[in-house]
Length: 167
Image 1 (cartoon, rainbow, N blue to C red):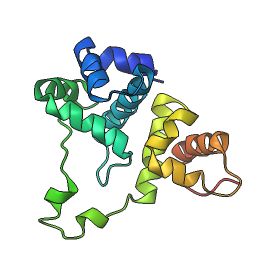
Image 2 (cartoon, one colour; image 1 turned 90 degrees about the vertical axis):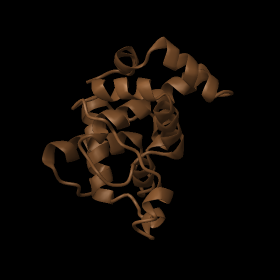
Image 3 (cartoon, rainbow, N blue to C red; image 1 turned 120 degrees about the horizontal axis):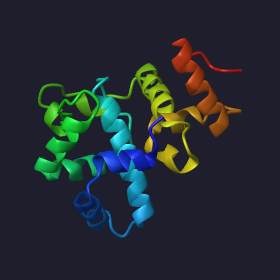
């Protein structure tokens, strides 16, 4: 498992931490760290999947800020799993080719697969991080589910490759 501290140590320079603290003010430095960590988790796994981004607007915002520092973003992508540049395109741009681009939803199976990979690589979801993963919050709306049940199910879904509801 990769810890949050390991993520920051591997991918976040002091200059970028300073930059994010300034850009995301008045958030606390701890909350900025959480958003950076969740962005790094997403970007590190993004090379393995396509489709709509399975993260919240807050994480997308951190991604946008990183992209604005193009040299730093290029260095980051080179360090990510696979070493490939992670492209980003807005729905407004995509709408030129597909008038339905803004209406596309995250595929549930794709989202669950992504969340299962999250649990396998970074450990169980923590309560203060769920809000950044829309599919996870959606799954918690299942009657009788809680954070422990979600994490258990995601861990077993990854191992089995099945996404059937746990009883």
